[in-house]
Amino acid sequence: MKVVLSIKPEFAFKIFDGTKKFEFRKAIFKNENIKSILVYASSPVQQVIGEFEIDEILNYDLPTLWNLTQEFSGISEEFYYDYFANKEHGFAIKIKKTRKYKKPKCLKEDFNLLPPQSFAYWEDKK
Image (cartoon, rainbow, N blue to C red; front, side, top):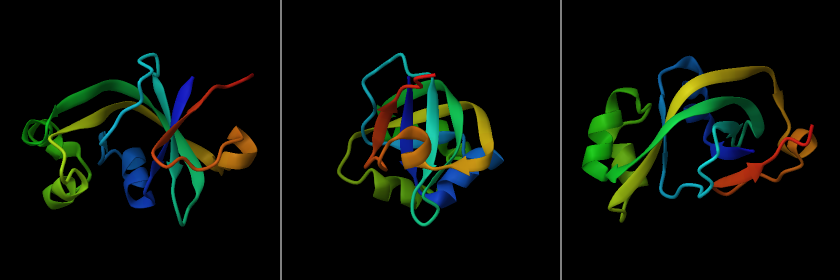
């Protein structure tokens, strides 16, 4: 089983060029067996552009989380704190190994999913 994450294209592409090694989330999926993430680049791209393996998921208060992740956050400190406004803790998914697809995939046709608001579970039926 994998999780599909909707990620803004500017950040999704940074994951695959190596400048973003943490994906931040206000809430995280509950299934601890998830080892891989499908990256859905949201509008205007609207395609699954690749996937990555999860190294670990960090959960800390916001200043600690920023200190641990800022070098490879792929975002500014201002964006970080705006994103987590009104939250005391945040999650950061540490990216281990990426695989960008040569040809992006369609979420509906290839995965039979609609774009998730935050995330969606997907199981390969092959």
